[in-house]
Structures are given as structure tokens and as C-alpha cells.
Length: 334
Image (cartoon, rainbow, N blue to C red; front, top):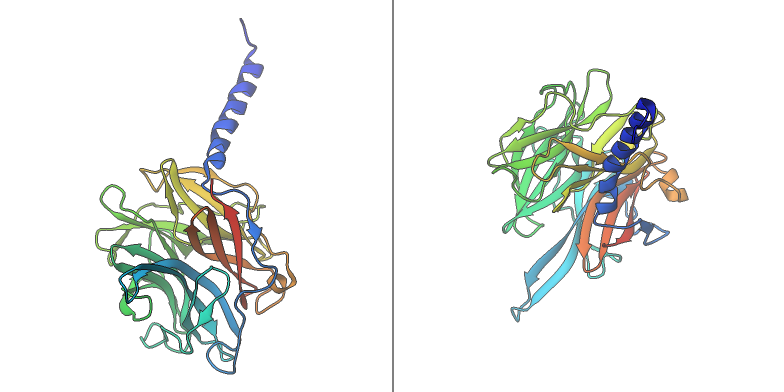
């Protein structure tokens, strides 16, 4: 059978588009739905969390009780901001992932020179063995830089310093933020997606690897996940929570902002054996601001996903709303 060249080319392009879209069907979760139409955490009091409680990292913490029986709880580390704009990290816990009880005092407050007067912001969590690794932004009212702290109990933290300095890198010309660490070693190395600022002043996503979690080497010459002009991620492409590792790929939820700085969530899938290789990326956002409290706050029109827990047959997605509140969405696991 003879196929005309134009038809053959069209068929090849169509086949390619199906091949590129196929990984979307392999995502480990189905469509997201808000688990609450109201914030699950809001500002309170007149002190360290009076202006905003937002951008949470969440993990499921397993431990032993007094009878040596296994117990578990959702633990949230959230960015709390006072009226002067200084940020601390608060701690809250829950048995059901929906109703959280807060500690009265923050578990991490600005102390180091790279945090003074601005604060500790926007945490992400990853665990290896018995140690939790907290990546966060240290901000001193001048520079924002990606920092690391470690803990065994999620309450007492030991600073490890700045791990990605600002104004350095193959393409980054500005601040560094948002370290999302892959949950297992690949090719004998730890891998981390992060945010930097390109020469055109847009915020895009980088990738680095490390042998010890403290010293990181950039893995690409250009952004590993660049912005896309005219789309929902035309201005900002920022890692969300720690990626999900599946047999088919590295699933990374990310936060995208358009030219009007409306923040929505997208998802990208990278190669399971090569974190530099993009396999698939959503053309449309998978989550967007809809509720009034997601549209009105300290920064309007923002949903910013930073926490993720897979528990039983559900995924919980925790997000900051309008830089003021914490919300939660859920999706059935496949």
C-alpha cells in the first residue's frame, strides 16, 4: 500500500503526539478535588502567625507509642508570617489529614545571618532512613537562598547552611528557592529540582545532584523545565512537593504562574533513570484558584502546592492559598 508523503507525515506526527501524551495516563493519581471548601489553617493571634499561615510541607510520621505499637500522624510544617513580614516555620499535626492541632511556638525561626529580618520560608520535606531533610528559603531582606536543615523528630532542627547560593549557576542569575528532593538515589546520587532566575528575569526550574546532600552540582546547562510563553507557566516554573517515584518515571507537581502572576499547579514526568530527561508535561493546569480565599489574600489568585502525602488509597495535596491560608485537595490513587 502506498501512502502519500503528506498523509504519512501527518500519521507520524499523530503517533508522536499519542506517545508524548501516554505518560499522563500513568500518573499515580486521578483528578484532584478539594477536600475542604474552607481553609484548614488560617492566621491567628497577634504574634508570629498573625498575618499568614501558608505554603505547607506535610509528611506522614511513623513512630512507636509507649507500648511500642506503631502509630502515625500527619505532620505539617507551614510558613507563618507576622505583620512585619518575618516568617517562621510552624508545626501542626493531625490523625486524619484534615484537622490539625498547632504547637504554640514555631519550630524554626530566623537566627542565621542568611535568615535575619526576613525569615525562613516555603519548606519541602524528604526522608532518608531516620533523618528528615528540610529544604527551605532563607531570606534576609536582601537575598533569598536555598537552605537545608535536618531532624529526626520534625520538631528539633539542625541547620546545615545554604546549599544553593544565590547569583550562581549555569543559567541562574538571581535567588534560589524551592528544593524538591527525589525520594531515592538514582545512579548513586541524590537529585533535587529547584527554582532559579534566568537572565530574562523569569523564574524557571533547575536540577542538581549530590553525593552527601550538602554539596550540590548543577546537572544541566539550561533550565530542566523552562517556562512556556503564552501558557499558564509563562512567568514562573517552580517545584512543588518532593516528587513521586514510580516504575515509569519521576512525577513532579510544580507551581506555574502566567504573565499576570496567577499561580496554578501543573505536573511533569521525568525519566526514571535520568532525572534530566523530560518525558511529559501537562498543557493545562491540574489545579487553579477558585475559592474566594484562594483569590483574595496577601497575594491574590494563588494556589501553591508544597505538601503531598500518599495514605492508603488516597493522595493528599496541601497548598498555600493567596499567601494567607492552607488548603487541601485529594485524589484517589490508581
